[in-house]
View 1: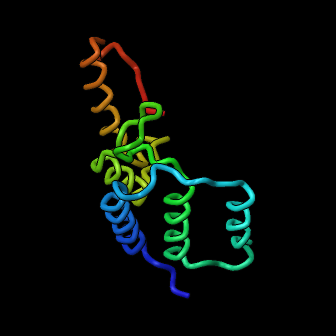
View 2 (view 1 turned 30 degrees about the vertical axis):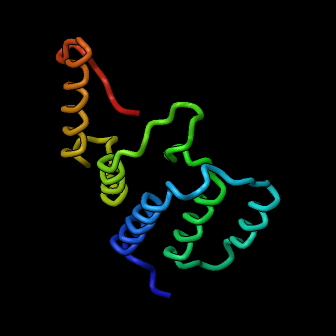
Amino acid sequence: MTEPTAADLLTRVAREAADFESTIRDAPVSQRASSPEIRKHLATYDFVAPRDAGDVLGDVASMLRRWNVHVTHPRYFGLFNPSVVPAAVAAESLAAVVNPQMAVWSHSPAANEIERHTLRALTKLIGFDPDATSAHFT
């Protein structure tokens, strides 16, 4: 079995996201679920042999569609949940692929400086002196 590349999987995620976005309006906000039903499905994942990552991705997407309250659904009126921001999905995907190691500046100078720049801008926006403030994302 040939393992799909990161690009292959990201393409698959993009297709799943587009399909989800285009069909959410006609889907139910939620469906009944039970622990035994979900656990029975998960029991097929015995971790004995490798599985195709693309197949697993599709199956997980299917489980999330079926056994999840869709807070981005137009008829969801529950707790306030912010919607999905496409730029954030892209940024999170890029960070996952590049996997910058932030613990030491020398291992990821660009990512560290991006974080510092962003935090200086945020501290300034909320009225703090960026030169007298220490901050980091957690």
